[in-house]
Image 1 (tube, rainbow, N blue to C red):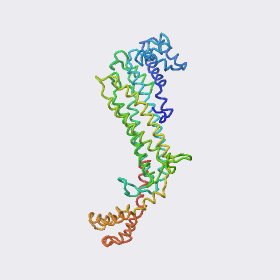
Image 2: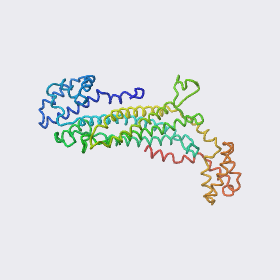
Image 3: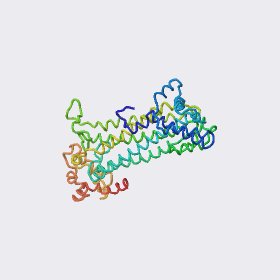
Image 4: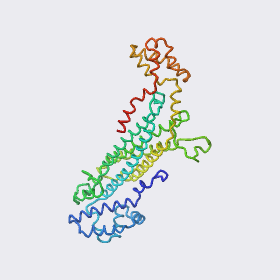
Length: 436
């Protein structure tokens, strides 16, 4: 992972020493249960825990040196532990296979990573809620196809983002449960050489659930679902990031990223204030989505089990979670410090001569007895004059001068359809649905 886009707590989960510590805990818990079952002498697990309780340093280079010779990471680790613990270490790994250790470890790491990501989402949701409530009734233009549509509020734009990330949180909770399974079932997953109660015990100690049926490896549909969920969250990040980038365009400038004292936007042009954080988020979202496809391709393994997935997961496990952790934290900072310009929002709404009220006039004409097709024609022919004048003309004034329109609606009735506050009468209702 690129250190530039990594935060310490998430990165620590994927450090080699952290991985080896989980390996030891799996092996020691399994040996503990085997001792209780009488399969190994109780001196076995005691020796392991006695050594562990001295808080030993994990000698990663020494283990790596063994692996360079043995060409097998789990055996290298077991040999190194045996050197530290002594003869009683021979009771480790009884009836287990390497995938029992590796897959269960990955489950622990992804579960711990999920807990951090859920905290990240909570922080983002809190920032979105605060800013949404702050601008609950701040009028702004709603756009469709990038074109002025009808008025909305900036609070509603942020409430929509809140609802989306709340769904992301629900999905991640489900994905965490999906991924947090333990397999201690031995070669080909039949429990031929290890009692199922060992798996149940290890799962309980590590906060996992037993895998219902493994084929030596935990089925990779779980991982495909997990990384796909991360990809969806990344897409939601990009959706909001792209909207902020649009809002910061010079021609729009309704909101922009915080620009700190001393910050420089361009090496060539001193006037520039570029949306670099949200552009960065767009790039990170692309990377996170990219990790979903290899996870989907990992589902199909040769004759139910091989290790073609292993090298893939050594990349995507750390990279996807570390990148998403960074992206969520960055987006939270952007939202928290976002500079918002209500005056510019009002100015943008006003610049097209009242075109944003065309639908209300259309509806009023139909309710006055005009067919919808004729009503649309009457409003559109006046609206196009305003459009072609780039807002120099007023839709309201043109409609009041149109004899076909005034034959159906009074001047007062026409003017009443240009009330901005009309569009905000259900804002409270929407906020209640989003924020409860």
